[in-house]
View 1 (cartoon, rainbow, N blue to C red):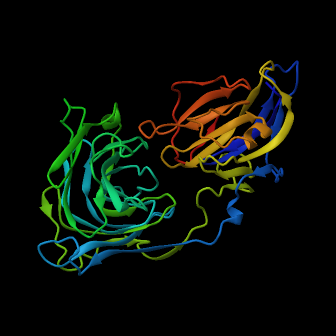
View 2 (cartoon, one colour):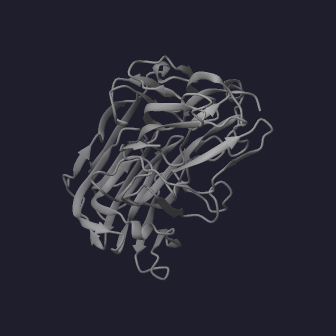
Length: 417
């Protein structure tokens, strides 16, 4: 294995403060302490958000006097909803509900137009719900595409996410959407009936969630410990998906929340947050943010490395050169971090790697694992949230990581690692 020549952070949103690097035996070498009290001038490789082309996202949704969804009378909610890292909502305060409560939402939906990579979610939220996956949510989701071969369409799903950022759910189709024979919902303006229901006593008390489209139903049980972990809902309505993407135009009517019909014949004057107007996007995939800042979100004295990076095939890193190390050397690293945000299935390495190997890798890690690396791997499936676990890749291609490990939440709390 060639010498490892960099220490890096690669692909998520966090801050690092004081990092201690070195061999584990003080008799062999004294560790280097990187205090970050001033800009250390780390090397940036890959696309940088400073070079991001100007991008404006348009939101225009709320109450409308129209009747696209085919409700019993004119008046509905919806409009143009755009994926964006900025939260946009149109909702109403409701009495507090939890995963110990039976929940239903139903109605009619008309999908008028979809761009590539667009989505919206409608259902139960918390006033503090934000991000993707959206904590404290149980929703009906449309995920839209615009493909040359298939045209404009959306997949319908029922999603939930606990208050600890662990998510589950199912789609209104058989198998995986990539290979299913179930047709998606076309973006032709035709109204469809939908129902999303949650039963805390379903699946022998584990909890069960279901979705039905035009009378055909799919259901699944909640994943292990998700019901016990819980969620708190005190808002009901529409929210965009908070990842970069594009827009869709969709309308809903004849909505029933827990069996109660909601009247949209007149403007219900729900609360709107960023749901009308243009939003300037300062971040989008695959442009990364790699900066030193005179802040102390990770704890300690001011000065830290602030990183927002995308899990992407294009290689990128934010790193400093170090003396060459191999797996024959005892190696140690520790420090403080604040994990302030993460999308579903995002990931980052914090550790030691070889820069030339990294620059030459353009395949996803699930196809070919990174070689010449020894690091913490901060990532995980949406059902777990994010593991904080050890990983390595040798020059031969041999690699490994813990199958499980401690989990960490993107709550911005300072932690020692």
